[in-house]
Structure formats: structure tokens, C-alpha cells
Length: 220
Image (cartoon, rainbow, N blue to C red; front, side):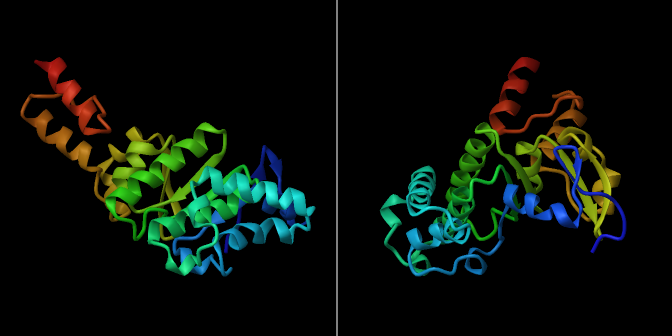
């Protein structure tokens, strides 16, 4: 529970009376999909939120179809969610929020319990959501993902903000990472090894193996 500070939405102060407006704008995707899913079929699950808004039936149906299409879930619409894989369940929980038409999405450890293929597909979904103009706030311990994907990083320790800035700023500060009991992303550790051998500049920030290979090619 915060003991001080303010909550702003689009630059406007959000008090207790305005929190309903915040709830209509922001949706949360839980770390554990089973904690979020409650309905007997995928389609019923995705329709639950819009129905609680007491929208017209046609509007609910339209939102459900759009969310299922967006998350490529149409083949699963009649399936019980508990029969789906972890990655498929995660897509259902995101469809839940899309059907509410929130433009701010909060994700708690979205890559948890996903295999590499599932993580890659999830990241593609996050890219698409971002490209569509939605604001994504993601809580994660995956430093490689945060460094590669985020526009802005807020480093927390014991519920306090240690620092905030670009991924390049935050993940280059080893003292900060040590305070938060975190390690630098793999690509920056490889960069440091190559820089110590004179093979690469310590001022570059490769985020993928392809970018690293390109930088090494330029060095030659």
C-alpha cells in the first residue's frame, strides 16, 4: 500500500472518485492464467467482461469475435480453457482484456511458464499491441526480455524505485543491478567480454545476436 505520491492518468490526478475511470482504461493480465480464467469455454471467458459492462448483445458478440481473431483463438472458441496449453491460456487472458477495449495493459510476468516458442509468440503479440497504440506496463525478472524490448525501465527493490530510464542506462549500471540482486542482460555481458578483448566498443548496445554480429562485422 503506498504511503505517499499521486496517481495520474493522461496528466490528470486520479482520486478515489475517479478510479472507476482508471479501471475502464486499464486491464490486468495475471501471471498465472488459471487465476484469471473462470468460464467453461474460451468464447464464454472472453465475453465475461463485456457482459459485466451490460453492453448490448450485439456489441458483446462483436468484441468477442474481434478479440478471438486478434489472438488467433477462433479454433479454440468452444474448447474448455483448462484443456489448453500454458501459452494458449495466456492468449485467452489477453483476449479477455482486449474484449474490454482497454488501452492500458498491465502484465505480471507474462513469460512465466512458457517454453521458448511460447515466449516468442507472446513477444510478437506484445509488439502488435504496442504497434496498435496501446500502453504496456510489464512486471518481469527477465532482464534479457526487458533490455531487448522495453522503451523505459523502472528498477524496483523492496517496493521502492531505485532508478528509471532507458534500458541502456539502467542495465549498464552494475551497482544498481547489484542492489536489486539482478544480473546484466546476456547480450551486455557478451559485449563486455568482447570489449575487454578490444573486439568491440563498450559504447555499443546490441540487443540481439544479429545486431552483435553486425557490429563485429563493422569492427573488422
